[in-house]
Image (tube, rainbow, N blue to C red; front, side, top):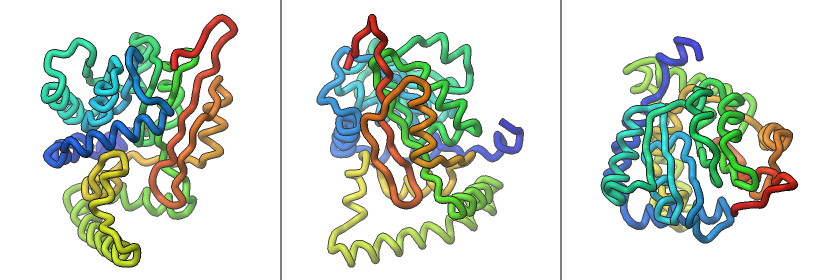
Length: 275
């Protein structure tokens, strides 16, 4: 990763600290539902769950509540603090949930942690500055028969290139952040209001049903999310399946945002699936 990219990395953890103030039981239940749906399971009892880029810690918490033994890590120190805060709130002194600071691009760190029944990394690997290396490093932690769930930004061609410029400006300094937020937060708000009127529903309230998140902090996450890389569904599918996985579940977006993939690692002749 270049020094320029490092200097302009978005402070996701600071955003997640603010999000925790809006976290409630309903949002936690929505995160659990999202995990169950994405993985195609009802529970994760006895399963080993790796959360790469844990962010707020919400999905680590959801996995732990579903019965998994959880290992969470994030590159961002503030995100690590957020995950630790949730662990302290809901599972104090729990030996089945560990939280660390680390990088998916650190081969020695990744190799030392072994393999897992579920490797989860939603909306993270495209922010590393080395997306394809990050995907490859993450999938290497999946045990035979295990599941690999990732969310990767959809490639919209020219639109994605424009968003790269916008995000780069946002992370260029205080003035850039003010310019981008002053334009796009009102724009997003107006669009949501108009869509709520057309659909005769409160889309702001409904948003928490999307993985338990909040619309405002997701807006900030989107605007500031840098480094920023994208990929088509076909490119991700080909890359992962060529390395010994098959696609089990796919949820696509028609516009900007994440395509969600659930892959299962091929079981060898002398092994069996754990999920």
